Length: 238
Image 1 (cartoon, rainbow, N blue to C red):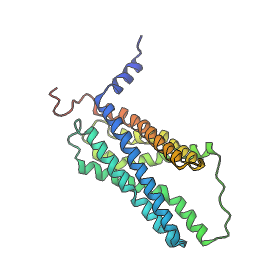
Image 2: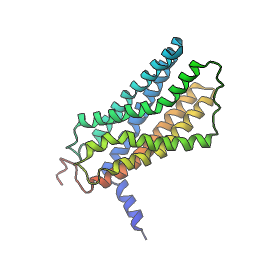
Image 3: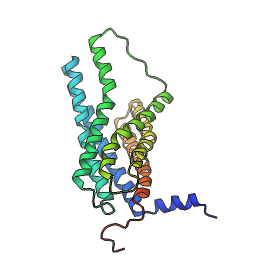
Image 4: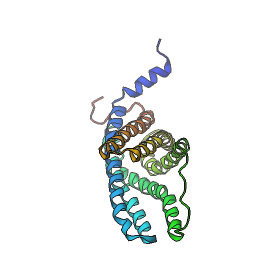
């Protein structure tokens, strides 16, 4: 006998909105974050020659601005996925909301390491910090994901408000989704650095980004379907 919980899960995953949302965002996140990480690594590598505090600050600025790439790719993919159900949310409004959240999240994400780098620059004799156990790193990544989710989603919540029921749930959805997804990225990056083959490292990171995107957006999609309710997509004739 099918339980009510099983029926609800089946109903959500059978939703065209949910399938469209997860597929579009999984690909967009893998492409957007992959390009962002690659560009950031390349630019920071080139900027190391500057040295000192100037090099650290320029690298921080470049890393934050690289978030424009991810925010644009993901924001446009999200808008495309939900637009038939939420025509009142314009492409420009959703892109700007996604961009604002992403840039703020990038600032907060890169700020601790930048401060530590500046401190090390001021005191070259300072002992290097030892890396904590992986379990601790992944737990911290989950906490970082929850905070980042709240930061990423606040402007999007403002864009959704008035177009869906219980728009405030979008912030909770992002916090939960990124608390689950962020440890996947940290684990993959740690594994990639340990691999001797560049091709294998790229493959691991690409696969992890795709998996992370699918998991994160599956959680988002579940909340979004619940907030949209029984709306039919515009132009469906229903």
